[in-house]
Image (tube, rainbow, N blue to C red; front, side, top):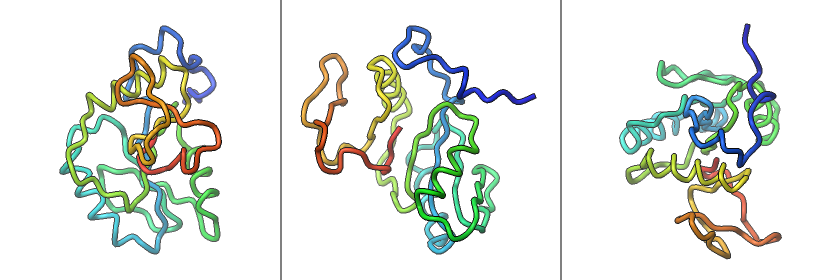
Length: 166
């Protein structure tokens, strides 16, 4: 029997979150059928620059499944908005957290699993719910004791982006 682990997870910031299991987080690449010519280059660069990515990878599309044994396809249906596609795909996952990426966000330099894991642990320690891994625009203020992490003031333009975010 499969348990929906989203309902039994601990609250953010609790002490038992110190050891985060990468299997509880999924890398979700959202796309649609039309730009499927970008899937190959995006995944090729992902494997080149983040070969030890610890997260199971999913590619979301309208109707065309990805033919790649290393990536799970999530086909959500036609005539949906981008937000509806993302919502359906996210609700189908059993993972507690999502590292979200858009199909045309190409890695161009190495990604560090250790650094991303440290930021992920900081997110939990701070009780946060969103962590942009591409800090553009830069945060308004830094958080002491958490290098590389900052906070955007409420109302700041573009403070949340799906370009590589937990």
